[in-house]
Length: 364
Length: 126
Image (tube, rainbow over all chains, first blue to last red; front, top):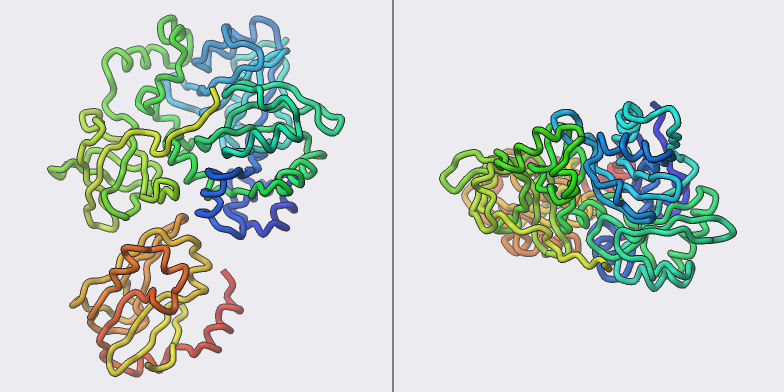
C-alpha cells in the first residue's frame, strides 16, 4: 500500500517536521524544538496535533442502529445525549479489545474516532452488525486537529465564539469561514483542549491562526509522552485483541447498565472477570532512579519471580522522571508494591504507581 | 590535551598521556534528541575497540555508546548520569562519558580528524 499523507503534510514539512511512517501514514514525530520542549509547551501554553490519520467514521440510521452498535461497543448508546461523547471499545467474542475509540452521538446517528492503524479492520467489524438501512462513511475529506493545553480555550474562543461553553466530552457544530465545523472538548494529553473536525480545504487557515497565537506544532513523540503521563492507553501497545477492558483497568468505560444487562461481544467473559477478578491487570510503574523501562521490559517481584511486562515506558518531562505502564499479576497490583525491572540484563527497583502520573485538568 | 579524533559511530576521543577521554559528538546528540538517561561504565572495566561501553537514551530510544579505542576504564562521568540533559548542552566539553587508560596509541591515530568527521557526517546523513 502506498504511504498516505495528511492534508497538512507540506505544512508540517515547512515547519521542520521529522517524519516517520506510522499506521501507513508519513507523520511528524517531532519538529525543530524536539520532544521535551513540545511536551512542556503543551502543558504550559498550548500545542496542536495533526491527528487526521485517525478515522472519522460517521453512521446514520434509525433506532436499530443503536442496537447494532451496542453489540460490539459496550457503551450505553441508548442514553447517550446528542453531542455527548464516550470513550469505549470495539470488542471481539472473547471480550478482547479490537480498538479503543471515542463515540459521539450526532443529530442523525454517531461519529466514531478510530485509531489509524485499526480503522480498516474496525469498519469491517462494525459493518457485520449494521443493517441495510444504516448508512456509513469514513470521511477522508476531513482533517482532525487536536488543540491541547491550558491556553487552548482562550485561543480557540477568539476564533470560534462559543467553544468555551463546551464541557469535557461534549461537542457542537460551529461556523468557520462559511463552513460547518464540529468541535469537541476532548483530547488525549490530560490537558484541557479541543478536537476540531475541519475540511481539508480549510485546515491550513486554522493552523495559520493557531501558529499566530504561539501554538506550537506537536509531533507523535510528545503525543506519546503526554498521553503516558496522563495514564492513557496506546492501542497496539497497552491494548490489543488479547486484552479485555477488565484486565486493561478500563472497566469504568463499560456502561453500568451494560455490565448488568450485557448483550455485547464477550459479555459472558467480562461478567465473570468483573465478579471474580482477573489474573493480570494494567498498572502504572515508576522506576526508582532514572532508568527507563521501555516496552517489553520484564517485571519481577522483589523475590525475583517474573510477574509481568511493560507495555509503554518513557521519560515523563512534566513528572521529570521515567514513567511506564504494564501488566502484572493481580496480586502485585497494589499501589506502592516494590517491583524490579530488568533493563539490559540488570534489575532496577521500581514501584507500582497510581495513574495518572500527571494530574489531569479537564473542564467538567 | 591532544586534538579530538572522531569515530564513525559518532564518538570523540581526546588523549592526555595514555589516558583517553571519550564522549559523543554534537552531531550524535542532534540525531538522538533530548537525552534523558545515561549509564557510564565503572572504573576497572576493560573495553574493546568498538565494544559497548555506555548507554544513552533519548525520549525516543536507547542507544549503545561504543569505545572507539580499547583499554581499561579509569572513570565514568557520574555528573552526566545525574543530569542527562547536560549531554545535549555540552556534548564535546564537560559532558564527556568516560576516561580510559589506552593500550595502543595506533587506535587513536587511525580515527578521523575533525574535517574528516564533518565530511563523513555530510556524506552519511541519518
